[in-house]
Amino acid sequence: MGLADPIPVIRSIVSPDALLDRVVQSYAIAPAVDCRLLKRGLNDTYLLTTQSGPYVVRVYRAWRSGEEIQYELDLLRHLSCRGVAVSVPIAAHGDRLALPITAPEGIRYLALFTYADGSRASWTDSENAYRMGSAAAAIHAASDDFTSTSSRTPLDLGYLIDAPLAAIRPFFANRPADWAYLEQFGGRLKNLAMRFVAEGLDWGVCHGDFGPKNIHRGSDGRLTTFDFDLCGPGWRAFDLGLMQWVAKDHKDEALWEAFLTGYAEIRPLSAADFASVPVFHAAAHLSSLGLFAENIGDWGAADMNDWLFDRELEFFRAWEAEHA
Image (cartoon, rainbow, N blue to C red):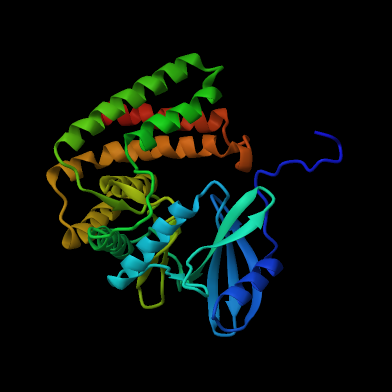
């Protein structure tokens, strides 16, 4: 590669002005007046303001394939048709839900979504926790008959345990004893999960990142769930494990009980599903650590540090002492 040759780009930031122009050309919506980047995460999220109200534009990273995106958007349409309050994709001209755009790193896709009214649902009172339980159950119940011609990687034990361990391993090169423990813990966690799976856990569409950060509460108390980018077929107890993580962080058992009550009133939990939730709570910690490791090329390696490793190892050891 010569000095004048272009340097490869891992991830670009699409100009909000250029994105506004593309959306105006591609969608039958009210005149747009502003577009601004809200946040960078697994994907880039923009707030589009029009004369009739706000929308959300997501520009997916190049690693997310068109088929994977179509699965998510098909799911959201399905849930909306079943009466579930979600942020819904809006079709562009030609009834396309995802539009390809050419970026320096390759083809990326954009999608336009309805705006979830309200503000982030707080995990501070039993009413909110109860409503979140109802929202999770509504998603699971309404997606039982969901089908799509597109597919997603299942949120199975390979996704939740094996892949994260493989991504984490290089960061423990100077901590061999901790790596040996982490590898053994992953194996024990997998064995525990397989015992519950053998009992017939509820399998179907999962949100994959269910929690207050992806839920808005409107002025009428109605909750709207969004950001299904990590969705896929899996054990529904994983979504509950994500919420148990939130509950444990808040150290309020009453909130967890309220969440379970709201869930069970719509979708009763089997004894095996209920008992397996702590296992998927631990798996959520492991998969989250793996997600950071897999994305250091974009997010940077600074967060993969000893403080994070020590915190997670402390959690794993405490979890094992209590449950295993």
